[in-house]
Structures are given as C-alpha cells and as structure tokens.
Length: 308
Image 1: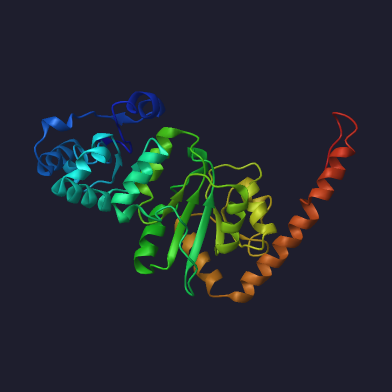
Image 2: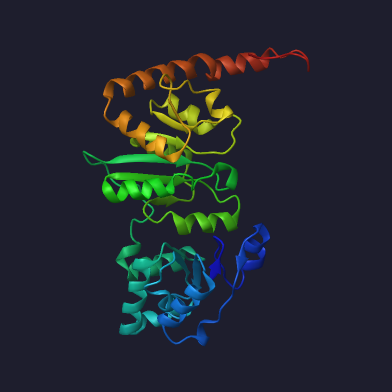
C-alpha cells in the first residue's frame, strides 16, 4: 500500500519507486483478515494507490478500495488458487476492479487470460464504429512527456460521452513512473509497445494525435501524424509551437480545458479538420521530407555550416 502517487511491492519499492522519489509502505497481507481492515489503514494513512502481490492473497484485501490499485500475479494464484471455485470467483472480481495486472511471463499471461474473460482485448484499440473518437498519445513514459496531463479531463469527458477514448502508446522509460501511469489510466487504454507498422496503422485509425509534453525538441510523433493526414493537438510549448501553426497545421492548447474545447470544435467542423490536415501534410513535405533532409545532410561541408 502506498501514498504520494506511488505503488509498492516487496521488490519494486526500493529499486523502482523510492528511487524516483515516491514514499512506499510495505504491508504483509497475512496480517490482515478482510478488506475493511485495509480500508481503515488506507483512510488513516491517506494512501493514494496500492499494488498487491498475488491475485487472491493480496488482491482480495483491496476489493472495494477507494484508491486505484494494480495486481501482480504470483505463481500460486494462477497455478493452484484457480482450482478452488470460491477463490476463482474472488480473483475474477478483483480483476474487474483492478486498473492493471502484471504477469512475468507470456505463459502466465495466457493462463490468466484463459481463466478470466475480463482480461481479453484489454490492450487492443477499440474497433471502428460510426461515432468512435480515438485520441492517440504516443510517448516514452517519463515525466517530461507528462502523459497524465489530460487523464482527468479525458476521464470526465469519457464518462459523459463513452465513445471518446484516450489511447496511450509508449515504452516504459522509468519503471516507477510507468506503474504510476498504469494505475491512473483507468478509463482509457494503454499499450506498452507495438511495431512501427502497427503504430502507423493505429495513427491512421485515430481521430487525432495528442502531445502533452512539458518539453519537446521536435516531436517525431507529431510530424508522422501530419504526414499520415491525421490532425494534431499539442500542448503549447516552444518545441511544439515551432512546428505547429495554431488552427493552420494543428491545434495548440494551454491547459486541459482548452484541449477539450479545441477537440470538440475540431469534431464539429469538418472543414477545419480538412484544412488542417491538408496544410500540415504540405508543411511536412516542404520542411521535413526525406529527400530534402538527405540532400541537406549530404551537402554539409564543415562544422560551421547551417541547415535550414
């Protein structure tokens, strides 16, 4: 059980979480009889998130928890506890509440998915429907990319309009922060990593690509989205503003509320969407095409040369 935006486990606390500034509290599940005891502990200590090892031994104590939590499968829960009807039922109920589940091997993941239907298709992007709106955020999971910046407003928006989805795709750069992201992306979808071809296919299927970074040099995800004829909504920071002209080649937002406002205006204005996509494609072709960049690099003659 943890506080201050962190999660903990016997082996993750020191190496991954406390190392990046979180405060963790380890609790032995055998010392507690029922969820109400853990609920009292959470309330008294003001814990903000939790991570349980073993789906039954630890997970059952977090049922009905008022804080987000995740589960790490052990061996006993998958290999032995599933054979007992009541334990199987409890573990399934825990998985329905958990924000994420971690399996250490592909085999363990397959065994778990075979037992509990709720684990199927969790990481797949929702299939196309007439009203579906997918917003895709592509980034390495580290604080400078700030992938949680829009989660609260997206959660509220998703509750009001269930066809709105946020999908986050990216590798875990910092494992402590990665676990934090898994806990808080509870109304949306998260995909750790996918091949580039699949990523481009996902971009083409989404409504817009989102960038919420605190700092950027030049976002490859933004340029690729522009090249793939997909609108971009990006946080208004110098790196993004350098390649996006607001309401011309993309949309720049200064806070989460403005993001929602701009997104709705884009969804309701097909003319604006087409103009942005067309001008963004032309911008990439003119300033960032492979041919132009290859020629520019080939023509570099000295350290003092500059390329525009």
